[in-house]
Amino acid sequence: AQSVTQPDIHITVSEGASLELRCNYSYGATPYLFWYVQSPGQGLQLLLKYFSGDTLVQGIKGFEAEFKRSQSSFNLRKPSVHWSDAAEYFCAVGARDAGGTSYGKLTFGQGTILTVHP
Amino acid sequence: DGGITQSPKYLFRKEGQNVTLSCEQNLNHDAMYWYRQDPGQGLRLIYYSQIVNDFQKGDIAEGYSVSREKKESFPLTVTSAQKNPTAFYLCASSTGTSGSSDTQYFGPGTRLTVL
Image (tube, rainbow over all chains, first blue to last red; front, side, top):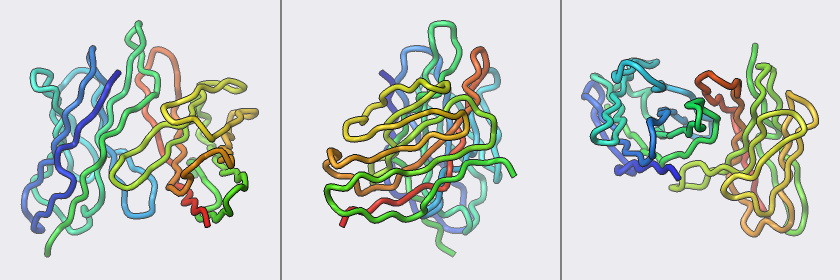
């Protein structure tokens, strides 16, 4: 069974500083990987996803993530954080069936809360 | 606008009562999902359905029931057998198309509080 670990429960950065949120996964084959963001009391918004190909993935709002198979990681980065980025961020891994097709059963990490200081 | 709607936004229930949470999507997606979110625990899958009239249990299905009679609707009933139902419930949908990459899109959620 797959699993996801987000080692940092809470991260605080200053506005304009760079950001890296860590995500480590466990899965027996090549995973599907996602980053979602959630504002308080809201649903989840997709930031970016990795299915195959280029291991550096660009997303919305200036975020990017890099898939590193050797480290089983999919860390999320942003070069300059804005106050509006304060939210909770979730990494998720999706399963593939025997034919390599994804079928939507996602396993989520526990989330990382991002606080941005002015 | 295409999207996923959940109602109500807030729901209060007395102990021993069943309640039904609504989830509707107009994205023409085949697959739909229900998750439960508790602080510090991420999202946990309750039930999912990949096609009308079919659904499977997720990781925490005990005390919950679902139906999928229409493609666009996937209601979740929280029964009195669910010991700790107070949580934030999220519905999601995806194309579920075989042979393609699949991405889940989420509704705004329903916060259920048991009084």
